[in-house]
Length: 194
Image 1: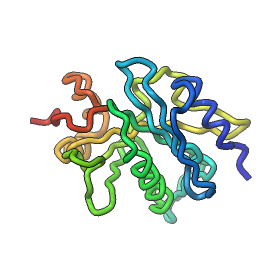
Image 2: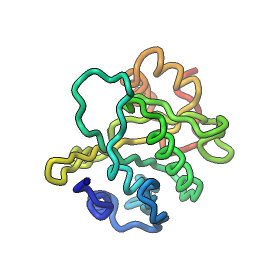
Image 3: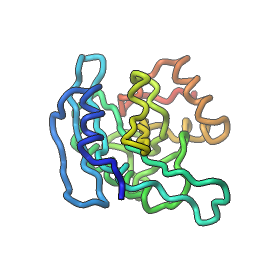
Image 4: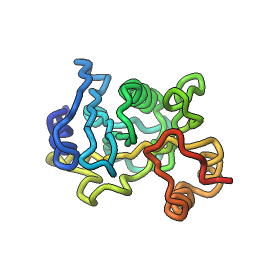
């Protein structure tokens, strides 16, 4: 039985984002709660995050032959605007991650069912999982006894950016983001790949 509890995750988030503005609680151990944090400043935007994915370690593929260590994650997404669609998006992503029984690492690409855009009216249909590059270093992970929970940043991207990442690696895409400085919290932004 896990030592990690939902209140540990919520406490970790609140240390960096403040108190939640809203929370969707599902009272189901297989579905994470989703929290919404209002901007701490106009520059930071809204944060939507899972609370409870880490209660269940991620599965390894059945053919995994290397040493296995428990892998626990929570995912979060940033948005320039308050957007209730993101509650459902995060639940869908969490369900997909749990069901796929594959190795989820940084650079992993997610897509909503049916290839839907990340949010209505956006041209971005993919989301890449990255380390929390814009957060303070202490945000990246926390420990409850011997269990480590890692925070994973979900960034919506264009198909062209997804293809670039698959061909060149997620670090190369991050380099392009640093060079071009797009607002990755803006779901109507243009692609950094021309």
